Length: 153
Image 1 (tube, one colour):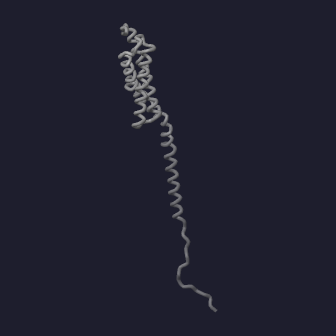
Image 2 (tube, one colour; image 1 turned 60 degrees about the vertical axis):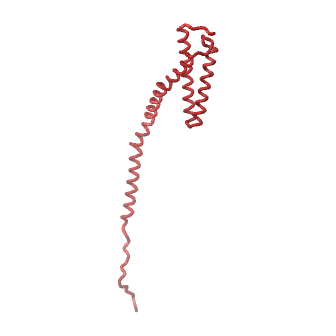
């Protein structure tokens, strides 16, 4: 039978497991970003994530924990760490990433508005003017089909 831990050691173990859960959630999120989504990809990543969490809980409980065996609060700590990542940190980082990408694309959008659109309109106007000039070329006056006089001797 395992020994009962004092509250300070129990909370330290739980906090350590929260860190491990956070790290596993970061790894899972990164792998999902790199691999992409899809039924089979998500299934493999989910199974790998659960297996990694089980290995970490078992290894932490056996090697580092003050209790010497995995306990319920180890699992709870990992769940809280992963929930903290997916509930608070990941959405905040996604918002930061969205704003950074918007700011990075701003010069391109401004260049399109100030440079490319006026240039395109100028080219269009020049083509229209050239077409108009080609229509306005003076036509050759052909002789009228009237009487033709011949020198006869």
